[in-house]
Amino acid sequence: MGLLVVVTGVFMLSLDVTMLDIVLPDLAAAIGADQTQTSWIADCYNVALAGLILVGAGLGGRFGQRRVYLIGLVTFGAGGLAAAIVSDPVALIAARTVMGVGAAGLAAPAVALTGLMFTGEQRTRALAAWAAASGLGLGVGPIIGGLVISVANWRWIFLILVPVVAAMYVVGRASLPAGASDDHPPLDMAGAVLSALALIPLVAALLQVPELGWSNPWVLAGIAAGLVLLAAFTVRETRARAPMIDVRVLRIPAVSAAALALAASYVGFLGLQFLGAIQLRSDFDLDPVLAGLVLTPWAILYWIGARTGAALSVRLGAGTVILSGLAILALSCGILTLLSTASPIWVGAGMSLAGIGCGFITPVAVSLMLSSTPDALLPTSSGLSMVVRYGGGAVGLAICASAVAVGMSAPWGYLAAGALVLVLGIGTAGFLRRGAAHSRVAAG
Image (cartoon, rainbow, N blue to C red; front, side, top):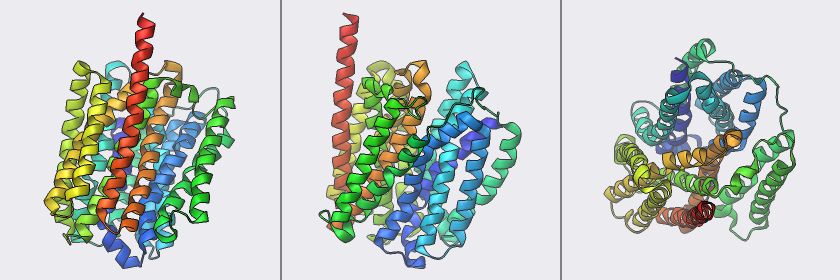
C-alpha cells in the first residue's frame, strides 16, 4: 500500500501539470484573466515545485520522509480546494502556487520513501513504477482535463483531486515508513532560500516580455536577478557544510549531460503540451474532448518510446539513445513550427513525435545520471534530476508563451521550443563526448 500511495502522489502531481492546459481558454474567459495572468496560472505551479523540491528533500532528511510527504499532500489538497472556489486571476495564481509548494513536498521524499520500502530488484521495479507514473500523469493530463471539462465546469479540474488526497493521507499515515535521519542533518537555510527564489524573477521577467518587450529595464533586471541568484546558489553549495545539493556531482560529464537532456525533455513535456492544447482549443476551436483525443497518442507513444529506449540503451548505449531522442524532439518542433497551422492532424502528428522523443530521453537520462553517480552523491543526483526537469520545463514554458505572444501565433512558440532543445542538445552531446574521452583515458 505504501508504494501505491507514493505512485499515486507522483501521478497526481504530474497530472496537474498538464491537465490544466486543455481548459485554460475556458478558465481564462470565466475569471477574466489576461494573457500574462493565464501564463502565470499555468507556470506558477512548476516554478514553486522546482524551486522548493530541494527544500523538501532537506526537510525530509531532517524531520522524516513520511511527515514531509503527508504535509505536502495536505498542502497540495488545500491549494486544490482553494483553486476550485476562487474567482479572481491573482487568487487562482496564489492557490496554484500553494499546490506547487505541496507538490514539492510530495515529489522530494518520493524516491527516498521508495528506497526505504524496498531493496534490491524490488527497489528497481518500484522506482520504474514511480517513473512510469510520473510520465503517464504528464501524458494523460490533457485527456482527463478534456473529459472533465466536457461534463462539468473548470472548477472540477481541482475538486476531483481533493477526495483522492484525503484517501491517500489516511492510507499513507498507516503504510509509509517514517524515514527520519538519526543524526538530524542541518538544513542549509541560505541554500534553501536561494533555490526557492532563483526561478521567480527569471520566469516573471520572461512572462512579462509580451507586455513590456525584451529591452524593458524591468525584464532585463528580472532575468539578471534570476541568473545572479542561480550563480549565488551554486557558490553557496560549494561552501556549505551540509549542502542541499553537492555540486561536485556536476563534475561528472555523464551527470551534466543527463541534466541538460532532462531539461530539454521537459521543455517538450510542459512547453509543447501547453502550446498544443492552447492551439487546438483557440485556433482550431476544438471542444475539450476532441482536443484531448488529438493529444492522446502523446501518452501512448511516450510509453512505447520509454520502453524501446530502455531496451536500445543496453545495445547501443545510453548516450546514443538520449541524442536520438533529442533529435526526434527537435524534429517534432520543426514540424509543429512549419505545419501546425494547416490542420489539427499536424498538431497531433508533431506532438506524437515529441512523445517518442521524450520517451527516449527521460528514463534513460535518469538512469544514466544515477548510475554515473557515486553512492555518497546519490541523494544529490535524485534531487537534481527533479530540479532540472521542472525548472527547465518552467523556464521553457515561459519562453514559449512569450514567443507566442510576441509573434502572435503558436508557431513562434514551437520555434522557441525547438531552439531551446537544440541548444540543450548541443550541450548534452558535448558532455557525452567529454565523458567518453575521459573513459578512454582511464582505460588507457
